[in-house]
Length: 253
Image (cartoon, one colour):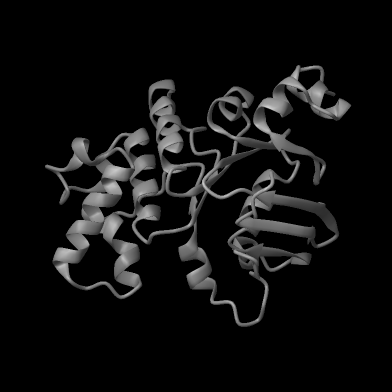
């Protein structure tokens, strides 16, 4: 991990009221790589993921100390534009959440919010985003139909296309396959592999096999602490921490 990370956490702590949910998390997320966060339910994976684009700000009882930098600049400085931060660090949620609009309008939504009005420009963005999300060939003849008519797997790839349309640097994925069948899951995993050519991907997954398949780096979390963070092959084949080994081998708890 010698390259300068695109995202760095420094002594990151987070509380929900009195509950200390993240404890002194220090990690560097490498650019154009996929990083997986694994660990048992309630260990802080999704909380950490939401820190990267400050989605936790939307929860009133949250207190955060420490810092997170994106391209060496703190995302907690007073002058940070939250809308622009979330443009640079996009989010794909656990369950597909397309808007009740057409397929086209779902993808064009973000660019329109950011001021793109020209129809030809929007056409180019929509086609490019759907192609990058490996969905174009399936929907190119039905762009004006409701996105709610798509299958679950297609809806999730549409949500990824919607995220890509505003040209983020980082894509956060919170268990993006948990609501999908194995075939749709395989398509999303193949897509993740392609996306890291142009984007940095951080994925929370409860599926260790998925983490091993799709990620370059893996962080194992337990009770709010980052127990171990390394290249995925090392985490799964040569873990340094006994707790990591127990979790990976199923001898946990």
